[in-house]
Image (cartoon, rainbow over the protein chains, first blue to last red):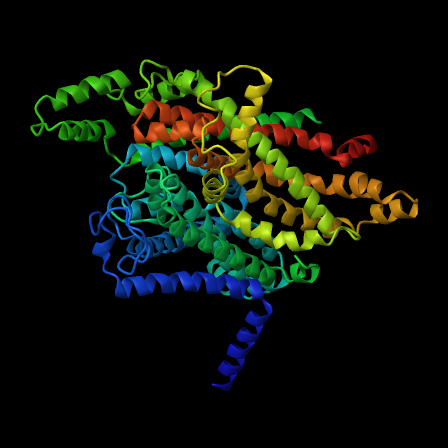
Length: 290
Length: 337
């Protein structure tokens, strides 16, 4: 019990030292809370078209006003925040999972498999992924579900984690403790799970954040072109409707600004968390003041 | 520059274009759905036709027109051939215009905006980043970095929206959108060029503001290591001036990895530029893509996406070929051998 408390204190002390990680986590947590309050208090029906009068200014009844179709914009962005966070985490987790498997196969076993994985990754990294996604989304326009979009984006976001993990595995493979583990009779799987994985955890966390941010960026980009799901409110689609109905020129700031702020907070939060995790992964960075 | 390196890079270039083209052919077909059937059903439904009589025949005609009744392998080969010839067929939305002509009208705008903005943000950001890690550089840079880093985390098109709201709607000093004034007659005259510049300030600014932070951060990290190198100490010992050491010795050597990251980020930056164009209605590929998407102009979508892939691949190739030219060590190695 005491050991646990000491550990927790250690973690807390570390967080105090790593302000980037702390502030980034707080921003993300604030968004989660924002969604949670919306989930508990606001009924989803208010985010549907014709839920209220069209184009209302913010008031007590509609704290963020309504759009041209009468959607209650506070309800819209509360729900949209939830969907966006979900997409990011699910796509990030799938991308990281694929990346971890491929990175290990590539770095640990090497050989032809390594060459194929490395080249495929390098080629895909050179291709603007948004362009490929646009073609697919446009072919299936109007019938895309959130889950399908998430899977689609996740299937094209394994390249960076693969590259990062492959590099780490390559350098760890030759370390003495791995040699000892192998000589003491562990098989490959045991070496990977028991010896390599624990050492990789910070890298995995950093990769997860970067992959999630990339996935959200791609999805919001698609939504911004009007290619998001039509049946649920999302942040990107809200901005898409706002720009296609000239909300800026009509002075309807409450239509485009709140979703833009939420998206900005999310990306700044993810950026801070990844910068904070970089400090853990590479303590030299902090000494150099980067 | 060794011939081997150039050949390897050219091979990679061809591979990238082949994989990208194949992806945009295959992935939509993996869903096992027929967009023509669905599209026709929707159009018929929208026109108030409920019975599906005659619909199948129309679908067959369209499929024959697009070659969709051929075996998949054959379709793929035809597709590759057409793409390589830049033959994307007719645009539905702008019929009877050909897709190629629409693209030719849009590409210079995108390349101009994206190229200039990337160049400016890369140079400014790299210089600022290098100065940040250099002793005796202005203090105010230290305070600017967090601001620019925050801006670089935010997607370009959100910066575009805010700039549009602030400097075109609230304070009306820049136009609300488009590439040039509606009344202006396109020509190569001074007022028209000025008009174009006036229209590209805000979209360009969105890309520059969003880019500087990342370049500065990378560059600072490398300069911190670079300034400790022996050749810097040696140059100082020789009594060379500070400016000369900074530009010719420190900066030149750490510019190399910076160019690599520029090559790697081209795809992300151009995706951002495309979306910024949408915000401002700038007459480049982004606005064309939006029109194509909202009009379900499949040929046009294909064309725009293919051109974006080509632009990024060519840009990466050019940067990679530039690499040996700016690397002071390569000629050195050659002479040593």
